[in-house]
Image (cartoon, rainbow, N blue to C red; front, side, top):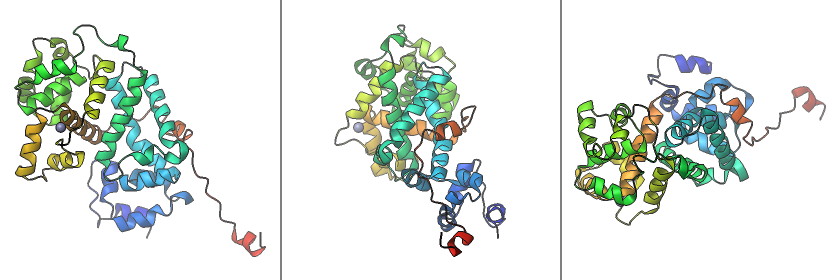
Amino acid sequence: MSWRHIYSGPCWRLTGGNSKQRGRNLPRKLWKAAAKRPAQGFLNLTMSKLMIFHNILPGCEEGNPEAWRGFLTNYTPIALELFRVYSPWTPGARLEAWRDALQVLSADACAVLKGFSHQSEREFLVGLRAFLQDRAFAKLEPSQDAAVPPAPTAETLGTLFAGLPLMHQEITFLALSGYSQATIEKILRITPAVAEEGLGRLRASYAAVIERSEDRCLWPSAWIGISKAARANEQKDCTPLRQLIRILDGQASWYDKSPAETHRTKCLHCLELWNALQEVVAWDRTPQALPADGIEPLMALIPIKQEKRKPSLFARILGK
Ligand SMILES: [Zn+2]
């Protein structure tokens, strides 16, 4: 039975809307068998479509080209989307920033990549988002931030969020991050009426933020600076990312969820982390475009382990 036969056979319910979901649905034992073969050019196209998170990072760290193709196919659109929202750069400059990041991630036998969470894709993506924001921050010019309205600071955010319900804080935070109302509705899966109400606190000082229809931060340098400071300010009663994922998935009990939410109304670190999680989940579920010339030019940047070719039967008979 061929792999194509298994893949398209009626016994597997491969109903996901995108190729990553179909990969997740493939039974693990089939995956293990398939993962041994990519270097032999075995259904390479299908393999990169079926690459799932738990195979990708270990494969990349071994220098496996199919794992890197899976990595680039899945995460290049997410990285470019992040730079689109959080930088004033042209599409070419965003791609260049991703190329630089890939060289850092893959250098020294993937030393930096090994530092990311390998437990779950969403934890990895939150880490990747922070890594890319930090790299962008180093290149951003504060002079490119909008002067009017002035960029928020940790202090002005404290005043803005004071007394606001948690959902309104999340909406306000995403709006200041750069998202239009239409995109906020998609990220948080809320109705236009809820989004509209949540944006109310911004009307007085940040009307320009509400009126904008494209997703782009008005103050990339200042805003990433705020996010970086919030990330660094973790307190001992902050909610770990893994627990936030359980809450997002509806797997946490009321006794765990309620104190975490109360804490989040007063903690910028947790609000930033929660919104980062919502953001990467939204990027991951929305198909984004790859660069016009695909991922192969990016593959050229990656150190790939060269597979030794098995000698032919004839050569082995001759002892060569
Ligand atoms: Zn906290």
